[in-house]
Image 1 (cartoon, rainbow, N blue to C red):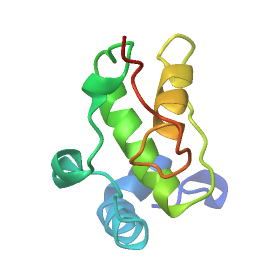
Image 2: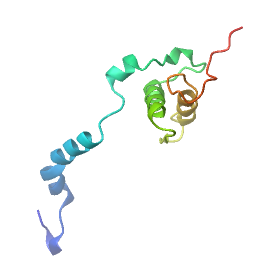
Image 3: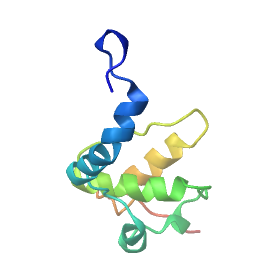
Image 4: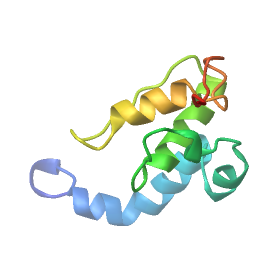
Length: 107
């Protein structure tokens, strides 16, 4: 595994230790959002005035669940993926508990 000048080849290192590292990361940082959370989180994305596209609905639910456990979070993504929509919808959803003013206007 050691190459020239005592350096470790990254590809060889990951081939050898990658599975153990992945198991340790998952054990230390288990997922907070999964298929079960999607069904049971209690957040109806149909109530959002602007319909989320693609994975935005999952990002909204996951962020709302995170806000139940922590006072804040960070939305990270490329420009145009909908970070503002995700953050606003999650922060103002009843599922997050962050704001009690969330409701769809009725006319």
